[in-house]
Image (cartoon, rainbow, N blue to C red; front, side, top):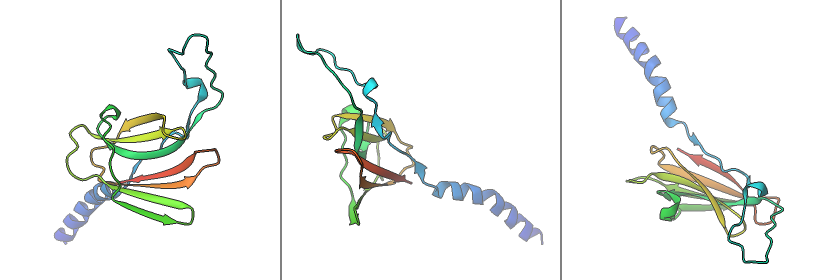
Length: 144
């Protein structure tokens, strides 16, 4: 009887730890970069800049290190199904400068926002759907 109590005591304490380790880490890119946060400097003399709309999310991916390193990674898999494209990235191995999430905005990714991801993340899947604005994609991010 003591043995069963010990096992159930250990199970009660270990289960939350094991369940938490299996849970995905939640990441999401902002839907857009507001027009009010975009400014142009060094514009040629005589020209007046005007920005009237936000830049919408067009792409997202994990990168190796901070954005200035330009550590673009190649997806390890791709699936297409009914208007969705899913790209998966295996993030195993060493990342001495960290694993980062990069969100790209504008039709050609002219602006990026990046943030460091948890070092424990070893797999991410990015599911793309066409958004309602020109060049926009809605992207679901699932990292574990």
